[in-house]
Length: 111
Length: 117
Image (cartoon, rainbow over all chains, first blue to last red; front, side, top):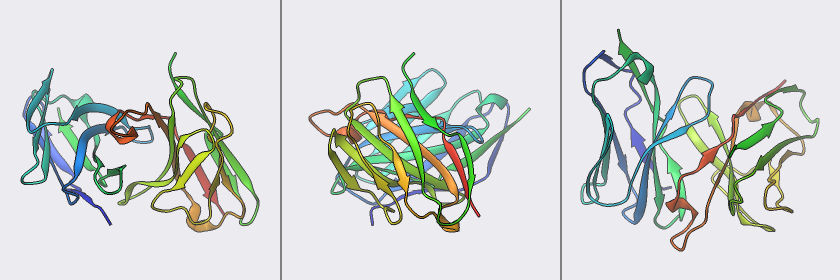
């Protein structure tokens, strides 16, 4: 069973701080990596995708990928209360040739 | 507007009463998938379809059926629902690519909350 592991949290950070979310994956052949944000009772929406080692920045969000360590992270700078949600990490490809989701990390940004 | 739609959004039913949850997308995506989401377990794939008439099992297919007769529609069928199928269900779609559908963003429907009594 190919796995994607995330700290379930909950993770709380004060408004304006950096939130750091982490994810590890077991299938070394995974090729695509995604971070989805999910508000309570809503559907997941894509925040970031990353395919190559290194950092990828989009506004306040930075995704980091280290394939050697099988590790993906998401940094949220200047966190806002509206960032409070569950963040899902997903890894795609590998032997399963499908997308596998982690169980999510619940983030709360305190005003 | 590009979207994935699901119906119904909420459903309460009883054990053994057949039901169908519809899913439709207007983005001409080849790939469609069904997930269920349970507390602490994340999103688990039930079935997926690479294109019309091509379907395959995901991680938790037991008790479910699907069909893909048209590119835009991918209904989920529960022939004899049981209480352990009480869950939040999401349909998703994405473009295919030479690397595979897993390489592209998946667009999710609004979800169907199913309760089986």
